[in-house]
Length: 282
Image (cartoon, rainbow, N blue to C red; front, side, top):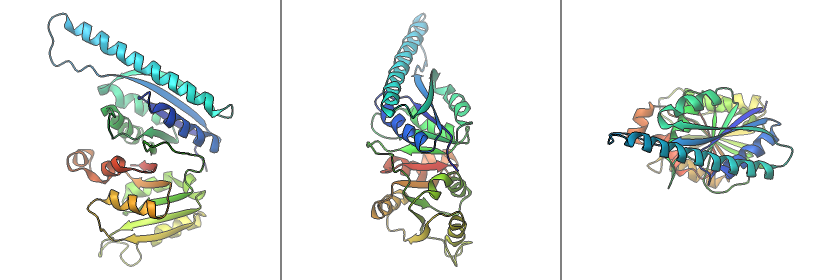
């Protein structure tokens, strides 16, 4: 079991080399093929304009998007050359308006075993980064590996994995999609935070999941943590540091995306504060 078709989508020339390099190392490790999409985003938002101004604004926006796409493409080609001849890869370049981004990303993600993307939240990160992550998961129905901003060595990615388990279908789907990582991990921690006293797993939290994973050869154990901090993301980050984990697996958006956007939500908080790569599926 391995990821044979990987996809990375880059819209930021500064972060494209790091994102591509991580995706390339995973493609090589899984003997797979990496597809890269270099995006230029047309950010023109025309609320009103003077007569004759619309064409000028639209032309300038398209030129900026084209220049951005070419810069991303050049960064990706440089990273591909550094990855070496063992990498099998292909690339394409496209321009997209923010409103049409979802369809483009979904079309490319639909046929990928794994989509590798940069962290969508942070200083100077564009709004399109969040749209790319969500479109890959929701419209594309693909698992997504979100990378932190800090440079990282992906050679041994997935040796020590924390699973955020809350009994949701999203978490279960993420676990099934992460099985290639889980089966090759040296240790996996099924992490449950403040389990409900009257839940379905009240007598043995995480026991059934642990049994399922062990039958697949996964070296898993259950860890139950008290909710000692306001945010679930803070507890997961602290636990990941304590066990020296290099990958977090979690379900994404248990509530509606609208509710998550208004109230914050564990998914957004986790992606904002992520210190290690986060594997997500919906």
